Length: 608
Ligand code: M6R
View 1 (cartoon, rainbow, N blue to C red):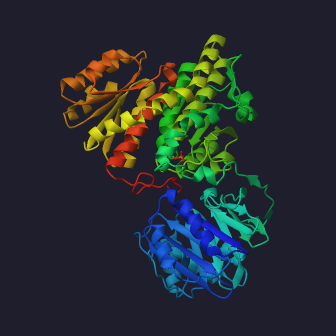
View 2 (cartoon, rainbow, N blue to C red; view 1 turned 30 degrees about the horizontal axis):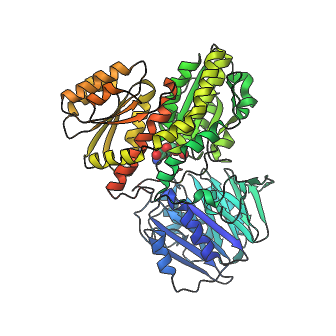
View 3 (spheres, rainbow, N blue to C red; view 1 turned 180 degrees about the horizontal axis):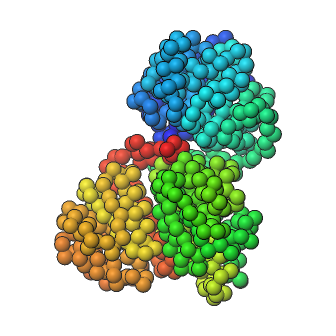
């Protein structure tokens, strides 16, 4: 979604802002712009399309100024165009605003502002903010923003500069992330630390309904009621090297290949082999209640939801707990009745997904306890949950989530194992599970070593317009995730289905033009999957099978076979998803898609 980056310091702001915008590109956007204050004037430049277009616009211009705000826009109100790109300004062109989020009462406010003489130049909701701040400004920009916050409904992460307050930037947040960066030559603000990690790893997170003023030497945070806030500085664990391509053509491929390491990071220091019990320090603050809980609800969106859906099967296998998995966007509007001592697990890579955040807030209101499994340290979900576990997977930049899926599965498995060992799972089962988990990084590496073969399979099938992904039990959510990956990056229509449902409808689609990816490792429903594959073959459908090494039976049935090493049944998804990710990646490549930034998509969905 939209991205914000700001700088105030003793360096020229232009190059710093452009570099920050480039680091935000992965979030998805359709236009970009910046405004720079030179002490007397503010110059603003915007363009439709890529940051490269903005850069060529700026080429040859001598833009001076050490205070500036910059933005990448993902259209909500108003088409992608130069006039709708941020920053937006007021009638007198002395206020410049960038904004992530949606102003819900913009229609009403726009009418009112027009009556008061405001001249609108865009179709956006954001422009309201510029006019309101302009009307509210009385020499104190922080105060003007504070008054504006009282007038607007909806969500925002915003940054403002004013011609007559030349040394400062004011930022404010309600529902859309913002973080301050403390650099050696000034201060930064951004919607995402990756925009400033090149300059600093010291950050301070802004929370909802807070406002902050940044100058070259200082920053101050206060509540919407002007009560000062003293917040601890945090250190970001990763650096610029984590946001570079490292020789890979795309972030998606880099992140797929990082999985042996990200799985290792998810288990590092968390496995106690002798006792067959994982150690999860992050959930210890709630352990006394959690270990007695018999009801868990996993809430998430997209890929995280599919990881949660595998997690449900794993919890059912290893514990006595009743687990529900819910799409956050639906869950937040349901009438919720929780059994006593119900825990919600919010599963989110970014920790900022608007629906997941809203779902946990609603669940909390109804008395549930909150846990998080989150990758981004200090993100909203990590702060709003009582306890939780970090993925430590490093930044995920490709819009299509890959490494986070296997990391989330690893952590959910550790959590289930920990609770299971407290319940009925034996020492032998615990030790066996831990041994199998420890082997996963090497086994993932083995699957990755087949990348060339998978690329050849992708080349063979990438021109087919409709695909089916089938799996059962642990691998049913993997089928859903495989289909999601393929549609996101290659724009091929794909459906994921539990194979048992085939006869209830989807089998009507099977013909020689519709390939099926069948996820069929050796497990207790293997024979049922074989029947499904036979039914597809009998209708001349093509089958790409993902199987356990040495499965000769399938080789006779399927058109193409990809092998995974043997593991415990509930760990299979961590291996079976890898060929699905690679198939999606290579198909997208053969079709010349924009793999890391697929059309219409954003990395972090921070609006509803
Ligand atoms: O940051 P989150 O894990 O909360 O994001 C959830 C979804 O928006 C995300 O998984 C999305 O579906 C990805 N594009 C999937 O590749």
